[in-house]
Length: 189
Image (cartoon, rainbow, N blue to C red; front, side):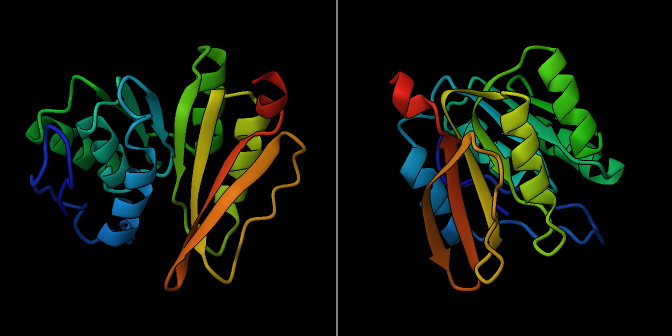
């Protein structure tokens, strides 16, 4: 895997060996980051199902002020730590190794708020949708914050929380990316 742009542009890093991580494809990553590139500098980012750290590293390389990469798997978390150091992004990237629910509850208790939350969980089990709903209920999004949720094209999320507003869905072959914002931001804007 490689970093597309920013301070670590072109640098390569490893995914955890033997793991069932499914890194975001470069063309999807390029499209997502192309659409948010001007809002990333100085932002706070959460990559909740980090796997290899791919999305978090790209955000850090492009100027995010703080990136939290969380993965429940200890081997993934250790690989993310090693890669952050290798890419010289370890001053920006923090690594957490918790169940997503515990991670979100801890972040809420700490008063954290994020401009961007990346959710790239296993497609079929509904975990990303559960996480998105918890993020909205815990008010973890900053004003104008966005959840960027990757999912199977044929399995779109169906968030039931009234705080969530779908702003766009883009398809890339068999996968898709849906972007959610707080519904009340428009009224407060």
